[in-house]
Length: 142
Length: 205
Image (cartoon, rainbow over the protein chains, first blue to last red):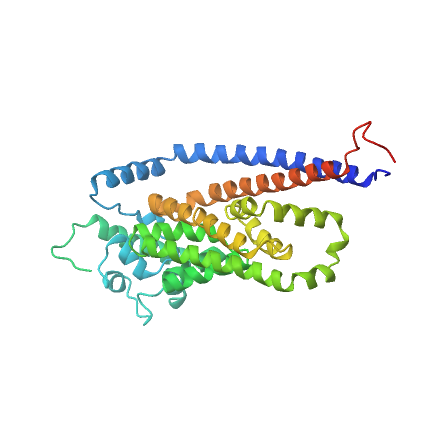
């Protein structure tokens, strides 16, 4: 039975593709290693890991997120839950009149006020930071 | 506003309904940043905005439903598509179908961890008629690995979840490339076995 050359050619092509993918795989592994090192050296990540390990062991406390992590896509009811804010705090502080509150994003609030998203975001962050830095009021409820 | 920002807003507004819709659409067809969304939901769970276990069940169920949708669509209409695109003319397509059927368990399981390769493998599995129960079982088992991993990373690292989005994508990319190498290597070996010259003295024609 005559042997077709085509399967050999097919195998060669496949083997070359495998070799190329092998190089790509090595590159991706290298990139992952770099990212792992970057995460390992990140102070915030390390602090968070230590907090979590301690919280897991002692089952005490809750990590309060930093106001710097607030983004425009976040809703006000999420901010209330994440930062332990009273439900009307941000509404009063920022004079929010949109009836959708608290199911309103920071970005939508900026559009309501025809304000720049960045300045509104900074105002929200400042309001949250002000609450976090003030002493908690007695008998607060959520 | 980016696609991810829009998805995150929907998650905050519509919670588990949005989670199901996003994960389902991402696994069925659309190239959505599902891993990033799951990392975020894990973080939201840590802040008690979502319940971790409900999120896990919803994500796994949505993933399986989306995978099965893609599989069943090509299982039902695959032959017409194959003829229309003349895929059956290509010998490689035959090799690929044979390999996917022979190693269905491992390829279905591994591609669940391989990002967008999962979508492609769903369609191929239906096209080459991987048995339904084999596909369903290993799809379910595979989906019990990636979504919980993403949710847990988000839960642990909270508001820093976005720092893990790119490494997570790179890791799934590594798995995808490794699976493709595995499949191609098996096909290459299969071709060699079929077309290797016979041993001398074994008879000649």
